[in-house]
Length: 140
Image (cartoon, rainbow, N blue to C red):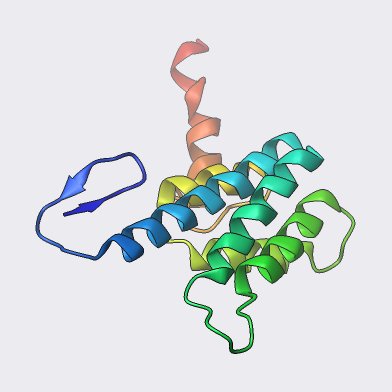
């Protein structure tokens, strides 16, 4: 049985304990990145970095170390914190493109003020039309 990060099980898929732990760690890492995006607190950056380091250590024997999560955490946190970075939008959109969960994508896009985040459910023109029509029936 596989448990998602909330402890709910999916009986149709079986994985070993290492895969479940790794999936939980990745979920925790995503939440830590989101938390940093909301708080901009250095301690939240450090928490995300610690989780990233733990994930990167998985499966490392004596070969070269895997550094995707540590490197990505640094890039993301710098892009989140530095709103004047010319590469900011590209880094944040690349992160959103890697995430499958539409709720996370929407929350993260809102936290970092990305216009029309990836996975938006309503097109910008439709949003504008809805706002324009909102008061129409009440004025008159």
